[in-house]
View 1 (cartoon, rainbow, N blue to C red):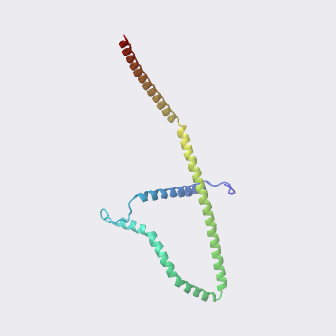
View 2 (tube, rainbow, N blue to C red; view 1 turned 90 degrees about the vertical axis):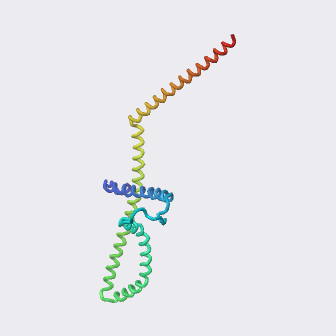
View 3 (tube, one colour; view 1 turned 60 degrees about the vertical axis):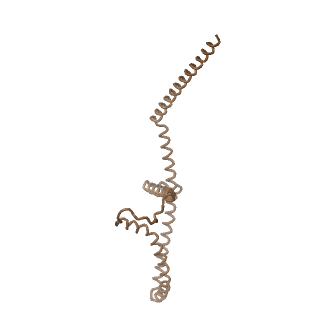
Length: 199
């Protein structure tokens, strides 16, 4: 880790979890989108099987939630426009009160500190996310390599391969002997016929 020194085990686990979750999520979403394209749509008008229950209503509400939230935010933005003018007017009135400048400076300082803190957290989060992805890719590649190596070096696997090779060798030799014996027998019969006719 360049410039960071030694990273704690908990932080490495956190990084790995973030990276592995992000990688798995991307791959899972891509696979699910491909599968979803193969399935018939859920918006068809077929009658449901069985009676509808509370669980069905909750699932329907949850599936409608992203669209509802998007629509509500759009409606809220339109409703906020007239309120902005009223808020600006109220600010102008409050700014004329005694002590308003000092309160405004404190407010501005607090907002600046909050923005700086959020910016710092955002940068740290971006670094952690990238470090997590890098760690997860490296760890998964290493684990896959170790798995393949351990399987390839397994005495049990070597024994099974040797037994299969020996069995295949015996089988091939048996077939070769039988084929050679058949060929010899055919050649011998042909020779007897030729020799028997030539006399």
